[in-house]
Image 1 (cartoon, rainbow, N blue to C red):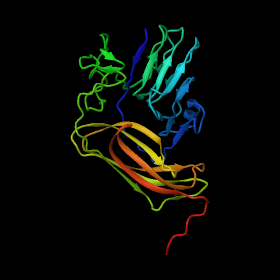
Image 2: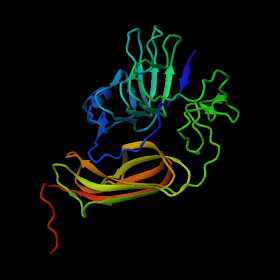
Image 3: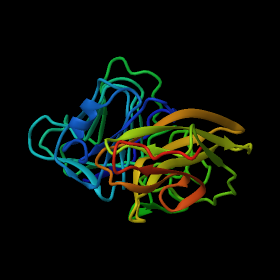
Image 4: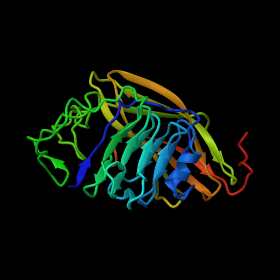
Length: 320
């Protein structure tokens, strides 16, 4: 029997680190594991679409391991009779947007194994393709604060092509402190059942430290402050992501995110951030963009910061 589920562990929390960076796979590293190994606490490892036949272990740093385009095109597949898993987590990292599939001859070889910590694992498709392996295994002796929902579902889930129907026992049966985009308790399953989304008044503010921003040919970075506000009395589940309009006019990205958060009532917080610009970026005019909404199509607010990548390492003269 095939097994399909979305696995959710621990509530989300908002972390906007000033020193965190984004590592691109395969842009910076050819494998997910190499990108994870290079990451420090708070970094994002952003994985492009593809099928990655590797075991990924997250242990040395608490990171955001995020797929740039989601489960349909970003896959970690492991097969054979060996002891490898798709993903092993030893800490409280975030993992989102992957299709994990493990096929093997041994029951003990799970697609996902949580060894320790309290990870936030959401919006993933975890798939056992044969009778043998388990989808998810929690094996660490030191695990704390893990919530797996109010009950197990043994009845017919009443879904079609991963979509839950109105009478499905999976509706509102997920982790109680995590919310679906319709603001109801999270559903069990790959796709939630939309019970009607109320109006949203979230706002986003971007404030550059200085203007104009000019990046030398050898690369550099610019500082900015990001502020998020939820003026309403409801907790609002939302995604935050960024893209860049390059000199050719094409919108590129996301360069980080989408990151999923539940913004509590009357939330208002700002953080200082740094955006790196690599030497490989061509010279020209750019626009850095940050979005808040439901990735990728629903946008509640959007702010921009323009910057220039110079053809040389000498900055343009300023007018007196």
